[in-house]
Each structure stands twice: as structure tokens, then as C-alpha cells.
Image (cartoon, rainbow, N blue to C red):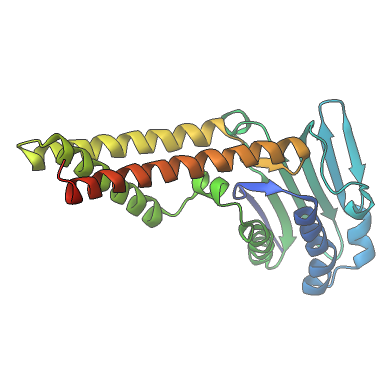
Length: 245
């Protein structure tokens, strides 16, 4: 028998009751099917804690939580599971709405003692992480996307478009030199901007009335900014093509 401990940060997500119920169902039923763990033992060991500014509330089953949304004061939700038969398995999930630079902690910890402890641990993590990945909150994923190919491509495309647009409008004689310098300058700004956002914004937000308002205005801001950039760029381009100035 071997022992394996796994720690990682779950992808940035908007935490809803439905999402937590999916995780609960996986822990209570999928684990039972996969590893022949008695369902009653899983139910007894599962603990879900919802923390707010005034205190915390514990549940053995989230279905008993009487509301569809969390309170505006919710600060953290913990999910814990700890069993010893037929083998030792401990799962701890911490979801906090504090800024990323404040937390600096892993959001999921899995410990397992079994002959195939590493395989079991990674299988459980991948299954739980997949529940978060399937969410459709594009702005949060944009702030925290981790694919280096996508990230590099987007930065390169945006940088080239902006540099060519400004260099063309300013009619710079040494176009290649200034365009290249501007290109690298924009890359540095975008990297810094993304790093700052990742540090200042929370990795996880909770479904509440207050957060619905924040998300609505955030969506309007980003979509409005994107529309403004596209419209002004195309307007200037076609103005020069059609009118000539």
C-alpha cells in the first residue's frame, strides 16, 4: 500500500448551488460505484461548510440548503470528505472569494492510501475539475485562461493589429522599426495587465443577487469596450478607403 497527496488550484469559476450539487453527487455516488465504497459511509463523512461574515453553517447534504442562491455575505465554501474503509481517502475543497494574491493556497487537496493511490487521486481530481471546466462563464475564463498557445496567439494578433493601425495613421517613415518596438511594448502591457487582474480578482465568485448585478455590469463593460475598439478601427479604415482622409 502506498500513500499519495495531491494539491492543485481548481480553474476560476462562478460557484452556484447546482455546481456544488454536481460535486456532491460525484462524491456520494460516483466514488461508491468506482471504488466499492459504501454509500452510507460517504454520506456520514461528507461535510459542506458555507461561511459568511457572521459565521458558518454546516450541511451533510446540500439539498437541505433552503435557498437557490447564496447570501451576499458568503466568503468561502468548504467541502470535506474523509473515510478510512475500505481504504483511506481524504478530499478537501476550499472555494474563497478573496483576492488571489491574498489566498495563495491550493483549492483542492486529495490524500489517498491504496495500492493504486496515485491513479485514484488523479482520477478523482480530473473528474472534479471537469465539473468546473464545463461552466460557460467566458469573461472569468478570459481573465484566467492558461493555454500558452491561445494566450500567445491572442497577444500576438492584438499587438500586430494595434501597432499596424497606429503606425499607418501616424505615417511613420521607418515603419518596421517603430512597428516592432510598439509590438513588444503592447505585449509587455498585456502581460502586466493580465497578471494584475489575476492577482486582484478572486478566483471564485458565489451565485448571489449582489454578484448578479456585478456580473451584468462587468459583461456590459467588456462587451462595450470590445465593440468600441472594433467599431473605431473599422470606421477609420473604411473612412480612409472611401473618403480618403
